[in-house]
Length: 153
Length: 316
Image 1 (cartoon, chains in turn yellow, cyan):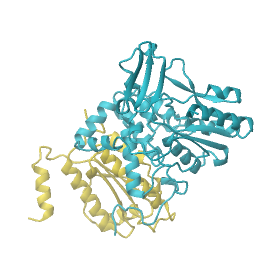
Image 2: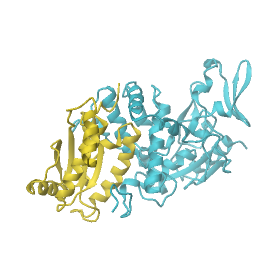
Image 3: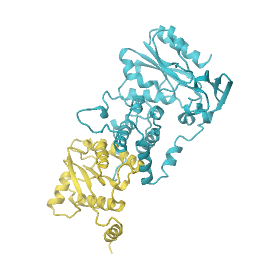
Image 4: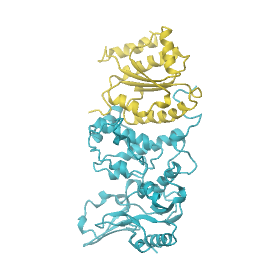
């Protein structure tokens, strides 16, 4: 059994078998959105769980976007942008890296499992990587199960 | 001369020389268990200034408005000097417009320490060598330091301030009586689920009075995101989830500015442990970017700069 199959097995033995997570992805216009496009036009297979929101730059991603997504009940959030040094606006992703690295840790402090939030770099040429990132996020969110809300009652 | 007398003398000098237009300090409150912020505008009024264990408000919160009508002197404790540093670095005030009167006190009274007293009978509250003396009609009672002082004061080292024009009090570095981050460590033992349950309990208490925001020197926006009527990002209702959204955003906005003065928590009428989040934020900023709010005039604001070798989500 491959590692992948083993994980799928684990997921499906859980009581929430059959449940599909709802994910949202904020993709930068210049790299990650084009990367997602490439994944599609290359006919790469990846889980269909993510809704994509195109943003002009990963620097546009306000941590409030992520908070709102969790508040409204998304099970996982992806933010992807150009690799550091490759930003179309030269430094947008450097600012967002600072903000989101801190935010990621803070979310964990507030009790939101780190498996639910993924922050990564995907270039326009990395269709394969995009498929992998979405695949891994879907899998890790499936492992932690449905999100019960930012405040558990 | 007592610290209070020194402060009055210095305030008189500053006002009569015309160096400042106003001295922001503490005055006697309506009852002796509280002191109140006062704006001293003439040398004669300087005798109204007091310094005692009830001087708790963070006066730096008034600075961005106060400097608009001329140079200002402000009384600031060690944690509050850091707020001035951040305000200067973020261009909210000019360094030359503010005269920092840095006051290192033995500690500030924690309101809960007075629970056993008849508050209307308290005549005077003063510092003693081993704590705080509360004078009532029955005489003096000394509350030991551990019980008398606020948490932030028990963990204070009275480290040298990054900026100070006048220093009053004992600025010798002292050993903290408590670990500042003990409660953060305790909280972090909880599981993710327990953490969310904890905050659900806390945030369902929040009545959105925004006292935390008003008391915070880091919250200096002219229009808060939560007061905007155009794009309504944060709902105004008081459900735990909307409150979570408000407090999370406030924490992200004050990240790298929050110096741990604890005013948000003290101002909160519902007893929400807001400084727990602030403390974690300062730990994270230190861990990820190597800076600490208000410690130096050289560091750039945390989100106003970047390094090409910052921590990366997927290091290559």
